[in-house]
Amino acid sequence: MVIDARTGEVLHAENADTRLHPASLTKMMTLYIAFEAVQRGEIGLDDVVTISRNAAAEPPSKLGLRPGQKIKLRYLIRAAAVRSANDAATAIGEAISGSEEAFAARMNRTAKAMGMTRTTFKNMHGLTQDGHLSTARDMTVLGRHVLYDFPQYYNLFSRRTADAGVATVSHTNSRLLSSYRGADGIKTGYTRAAGFNLVASAERGNQRVIATVFGGRSTASRNARVAELLDLGFQRAPTQVALRRPTPPDYQSVPGTAGKTIRLVTAVRESLRPQMRPVSAEQPQPVIVAMKDDIEQALQEAQTVQAPAPETLQTVAMGAAAPSASITPRIRPAEITQEVVAAAAVPEATPEVVTRLSTSGGRHWGINVGRFPNRHLAEKTLLQTALVEMDTLDGSLRKVVKRSGGFDANFLGMTRDTADLACRRLQARQVTCFMVGPPPS
Image (cartoon, rainbow, N blue to C red; front, side):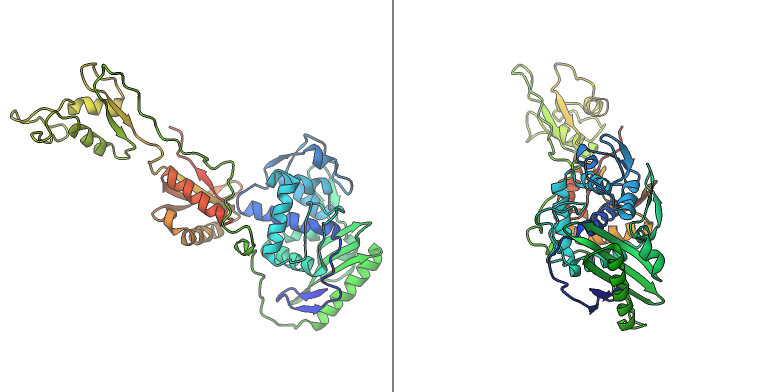
């Protein structure tokens, strides 16, 4: 299959919808999700990944990782993109989703959101597995998304060699990159069941085409066929055409996923309320001042309760003496102030004042909706998120914070409950979100 990458127009197709084994073309999706996870702040390029026994046991091609070994995500990405390392691909999936099954589910959700209608992923590396199938058309669609959705990472696929942390790895298709003018990627794949597969992209002048071949009999014959298809693409593609980038995956359109809440481990699962302090029968009934953000309001309310005769009680202002004709409240303002501010115990003869100034109610919380490579993208995401989730984010402060790994997009000035609700609602829309608590006192 051949398409004009600038518009997605099909220039040639032959058996493009036949479901076949994709082999390591699968790693395009693994890498796409890794790029997406980094952009959304789920994981950082310099985050250290611990290699599992499952990842280390993958057959070649591999980087040679050992169980328990620690390595940065950026090196795993390079190994999977350039060397097509199976152990690196498995480690990437486990680091992002926790298990092969969970990551495969995310791969399938992303594939459906891209319009890859005849693809089913069962693993993150592409080794032959029953039901793990795709088509030339779907893989061409995926290749175009990799190219245009994450151009900042696309150069990985044209590197002849790359530093993978523990070793320098060489590209699996240096021959085509070296022999075909304008070729700059994207991904090879081979297993006995699949044959020799390739999704290739090339650019000449203003033209860019993508060609896909499944089931080649050898590296040489596959590369020759891809070169023919690329030539055909350049002949048929117009020299000048308006660029129409592919639409990013629409996860809301995927049946069975819209409205699903995904809870991150960093999100608060339960918001506990303070319990009233038990009071013995001999002690006077306590005055409860609960869940107040405004201390002054709490003090005023404490002064006006528990009075013996409400119909004759005159309000006593903060710090002012009551007129002699009025009934003096049983709790004096000075004692209340001391209780609230200094948390000192009051004498036994004085009613106990229990103050519970809520950290949940205070607007000291926030949420993070991702880490981005530049400030502009972070600010754009904040604005888009605010428009999507106006109910809970209304009145919050949008703030971009520069970190060593990028720019954090935060909403601040929220209560704990509102932040938790906002995160749950955003996660239901497939938006990455975790809560940001107040600084330690």
